[in-house]
Image (cartoon, rainbow, N blue to C red; front, side, top):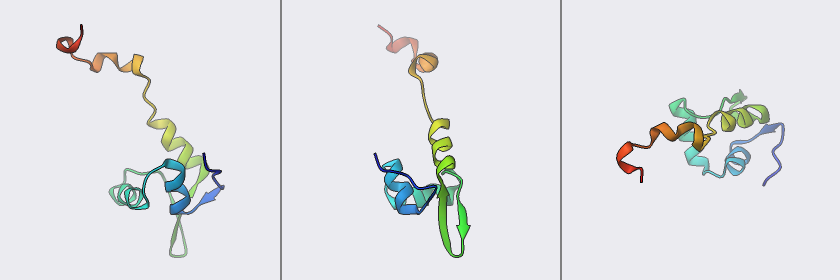
Length: 74
């Protein structure tokens, strides 16, 4: 995995998240992506914000077993 700097560019953040720059930009514009900061005309991502955003999307299958319909169970 890529080393993530304390203050990452959009490219570095996208590389870390393993998504395209365009996808990360779309998430940002939709208000669905990680928190970011504007410095001058550029966008930067704090390492702690990227890690928190990923952690908030963690799904533990056993905790979501209620999502499986009864019809699809053996």
